[in-house]
Image 1 (cartoon, rainbow, N blue to C red):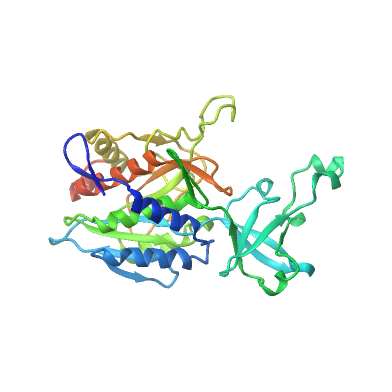
Image 2: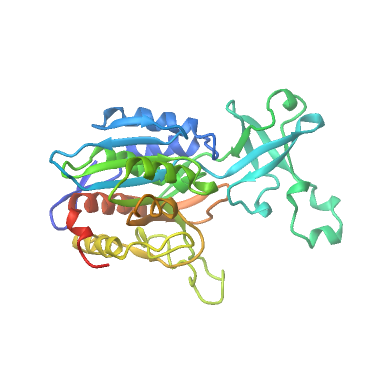
Length: 362
């Protein structure tokens, strides 16, 4: 469970148990607003931790590890439990359902994709006209969500109802150095945060929030940050790896994060300008422990930090993400070593952080 860095300190390292936990989390269905399946796994996993655990009114799991001394630095870490997916909005004949998107999804990816619907995981498929039944004019246009249906078969009308969520039916697998599965955004972060709570250092008050509804506006993080009132915050997430050839004329110009480059430290995104003291602290920590890291350059997207940093009198915040390809599609691919190094960097940062970080100049 622990590994030794090049300077001799003990850092967390993933093993078979953590990969099994990640598989369980990835295979769970928890579309925004219906995070119960992941919440149950998190609550069970935290039973062995020395934390006070509760569930708030929105469904966030809040875990607080008290410090050994007085007036400790209060450090919040968040990871979101929810995933992108679908909501059934209207029932039609023959087990067909209209649906709407939950979170950012490109409709071009959807035709023919299998899904699980509702708490009983009713199997279905997202249906569209086959190509030989479309006109030339239709083929030139982006497919409309209005032309898609979730098909549950003849008995489907009795197996699901309007308001049910649907998630991509993608099973987790490990292929050599790669991790593949749905909802690795942000089950990679959830699994890492569980380990960080289990190994919380005693000199700080570690506050962990496993948040809801991040994919629809980081709503759970806003409530959690106000409740816990931390001194500083780290959002643990996944960020798109922009590292495939030919995606634009200037290679990797948008995100500048790639598989195998280590955890991505955010400078800024569409919702947050990261606190420069925390950015520099993470860089110094990574270099001290000879851990790889990369910068997630300013651009679109956002994390729980977008809501956290605006609460109360303001909360210095930064995001740290494991890069992954094909975000917000039926499957993401990440590298095991990037996930391991993200976990190690965060653990090293928690071991080293002190109130002095807030007295330095921004």
